[in-house]
Image (cartoon, rainbow, N blue to C red; front, side, top):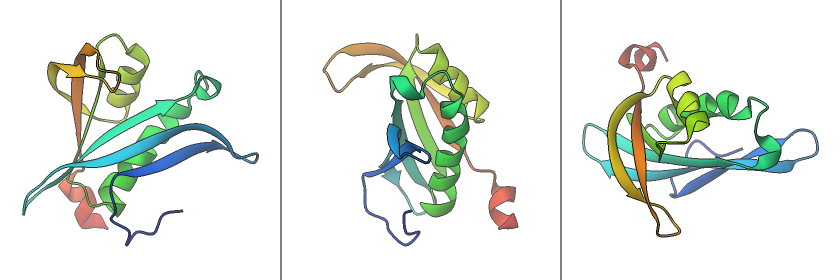
Length: 130
């Protein structure tokens, strides 16, 4: 559990197997930009081999997006992956994100990869309903 009042970044949330508590993956939230009218978060994640092929990414990504919008108050969540990561692209699109751009991206290991970037924007009507 993370306190809604907590606003420290970067923030990492774990995806665990219940009831044993085995770590299956994690989501990392990092502020990208803040203006008076919008707070944008970049979302990155990984799902380890024991968590793959079970629908956990498809199930947990929408939950991470709800958390980013509702608890962290992000107007937009930006996420990207390499153009050949078909599984991640399917998860992102199934969660309602739209393609924003295609551009090279330097990965943490220093390699340059052709990547696709998506944006997930919380509907204004959904925010007003809360």
